[in-house]
Amino acid sequence: MNAAVSSSQRRALRALSIAYFVQATGALSVAGSLPAISAAWHLTDPQSARLLSIFGLTFALAAPLAQVFFGHFRRRQLVLSGMLLFGLGAFAFAFSPGYSALVASRALMGIGAGFIGPVLVALGSELVHEQQRGRAIGMVLLGVSMASLAGIPLAAWVAALWGAKALFALVGLASLLSGLNILLSVPNKSAGVRIRLAEVAGVLVEGKLLSAFLVVFFITSGVYSFYAFIAPLIRDTYAGGPHTVSAALAVLGVAGVLGNLYVTRVASRLRAEQLLMRGMALLILDTLLIALLPKLSVLLLLALIFWAFATDLLWPSQQRRIVELSSARHRGIALALTSAFMFGGMGFGSAVASWIYPSAGFYGLVVLSVGFILLAFLSLRISERLRKRAFTPARAAPLCESD
Image (cartoon, rainbow, N blue to C red; front, side):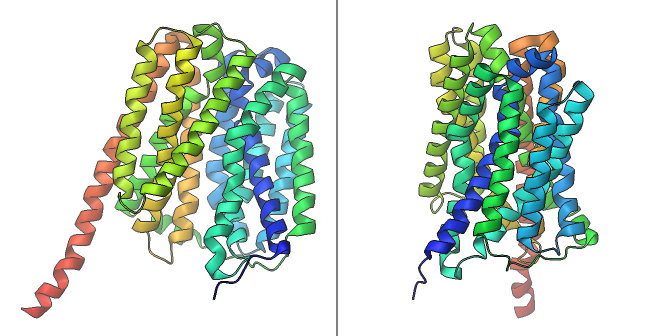
């Protein structure tokens, strides 16, 4: 018998989804508002792009460490603490007097996100009956899809219209209001899980998993070495303005949702590594196509449809592959480390791009992005080889016993 999701549970799940929307929008809005940030604080575009790097690298460290040191706290308490830190970081960003303060505020936002991201899905899944957990997780993750679809383009538009300081003040306000919504809507019943640092280290040194984590690290490095500079690229290479940037971000959001829907339909017929291979191949081909096409905004927007479709083939397929590779006991740690490597790749890729773009420009970013995706290909091949090597003795053991 299926237990229906009650109205109070739906309110709680919507509150968690809104929190994910706010976090994802605030985290990635730097990319779309790069010119506005540079203008507000008199920075170069590479300096502004490094603020995305700071967030990603801080999140990569904070997410697993938060689970080790604070994972035994109740999950709602962790999310509320994260929303508070994230909101305070956004306010600090809006009122920063200079670059050092901007860096510190983005680090604070990264720490806050490290408390939020790994916990929201687990909290949402525990609010409902076991038979409804898939639906609950989908409702929570809808916030991330809506951030790509509407939040990030809207953030770029707000930054262009009212300035970057107004944008981050709004992000701070939305974070605090979202935390209040969770406090009023989500019951404080979900207990945390104590995770030992030795368990995290044990998962990290397992070859098939470490190489699998490197897949997502290099994928995000490749994606964000290009995405972090989408606004300057449109301005410098395509002679586009803020409206073109918002249009490009909206196209990325819509196409990304289509990619997610495609993965949902074919997941039962294709293995995770097959979808990863297809997504990476499409991403490389489309990036090269963008480099070869005439530099017209309409052609860029068309090419970005396939670019975003490819990237959103990759994220759910990577998560699925980690679930398949990890044991039931260490699955939560493995997924948290996947998030850490993902945001670490985001920070690393955008940091390297901030060094490459001033000297090599558009084509330098194309070469950099393709190079990172090729490293992801190599990591996937190594991970598959190690997985098969680990699997073969398990299959062979019963044969040996029967002899």
